[in-house]
Length: 379
Ligand SMILES: [Fe+2]
Ligand SMILES: [Fe+2]
Image (tube, rainbow, N blue to C red; front, top):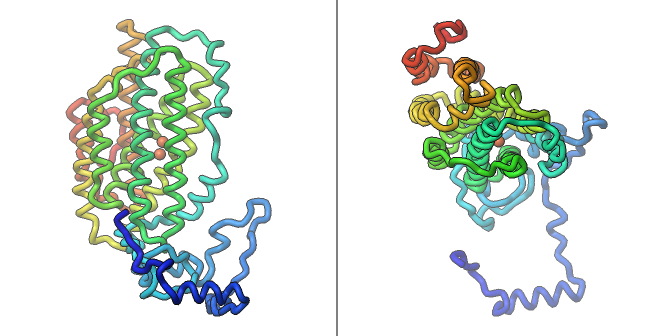
């Protein structure tokens, strides 16, 4: 126990007297006059229900939140009355709105809550047996799912690491990343279950992936970690999920990817809208983000040479015969160009287009002879 209260209440005569007084019916009732704003919110759409968007009113709303909301740094809910000197100081580290905020964050949270699913019953696990899968394809798929399981575990840790460091005034963001943590836990669960249900078991844990994941967890600020994870890493994973749906060995696997994709798209959108908020409200942080992404891109590039890359080639080509491998390389090459192209598209939409010129992915594509035929990269 590292935090001790200043009073031992059992040894406080005043406290004991007051307790006895209350029990005799001498209530203070001062709390009934909190002096807070009175609002009555209604669901704009009764079908949809009462959302945080409907609650965005006056002192309870997020639009009125300034860049630096001065006030208690404890757990006082936004809009409650408080005695600033008496509240506990929880020492949150993220006290500026631009540290955490994103356009549409309340909508992202509402969407997360309304689209929850579970890995136990939403996947027709029993159907897996119906589909014939070549052993090498099943092994490659198990390798892919092993990678996803690793990734999803860190994607669960990352929001959890930063959540309690955020000032409670930004509760919509905290709620959203809490929903992300449960989404990611479910993703780790579904990929683990798939590996075991396929009968092959877990394959290799990949050092390249793990160093990259460690770099995400060790981000110096939440925004740097978010740029790396939400925008770059989860963006890459989202493209991989779409690709994986396309090369899925069975309809059961397609179902898995359809479900994880809807969550992943939301996480990536939050990251893009957080970056956009920073660019619009704290552009002085651009260089810090550039430096973080310089490193993040290096870590991402390291994964282009790994068991994961080979597993995807085997899956895309549907086997290990030379013609199948040749075909697999072509398809995976397209995926890699697409990953980078979609990342550049997100940077553009977030108003951070200047990053594209500096990105390490441009020389990478040139080095491995990719991208020339895909006139999708900016000139
Ligand atoms: Fe995920
Ligand atoms: Fe995610």
